[in-house]
Length: 196
Image 1 (spheres, rainbow, N blue to C red):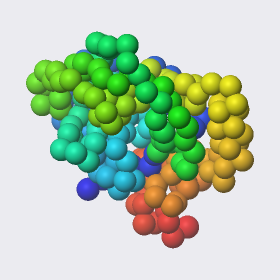
Image 2 (cartoon, rainbow, N blue to C red):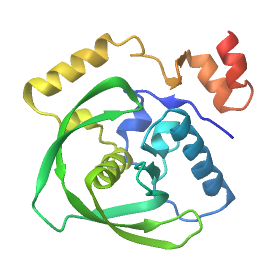
Image 3 (cartoon, rainbow, N blue to C red):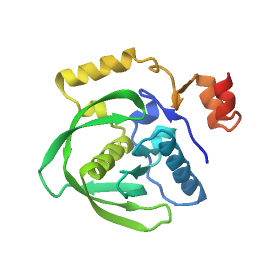
Image 4 (cartoon, rainbow, N blue to C red):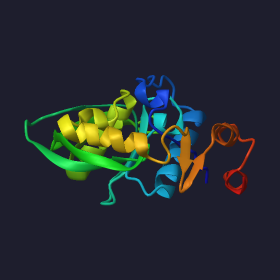
């Protein structure tokens, strides 16, 4: 089990379009496994590679209703104009969220960690997760989908959050710059960072 620190807004990696994956190798498969471990540890339903500091077009998901997987170089189309507002949060913006309008259903394509093509129709929570995570891969944060006062309130809450200005978080632990770098480089275990 390898749990990676989750990058916090406004880290530049979260605001930059991620790079395509050209070869699915052992490194990409390890990234996917680490992302599942990290998402599960954080009790999330989705996690994009930029959220763990890796600018690659990869995300993992688990809608808690039997749909769990990884998508590499994903895309989607919207077959219907029906949309719905629903609450979204983000592991890179702890304890802050907002009502986002998204299409109710999408058709998703991509590749899994074994290099196999994946195609599926998603609706409900799974559709929302996929759209949210693909936004991450495009450098778009959920706050950018908010409008008017909701956006202003979310940004004010972010600026006043205890974690704002820190680079990464793991559970209840907010890493100082040096601790996060050492953990990511494998020079310091998470337990050692927590003891600091």
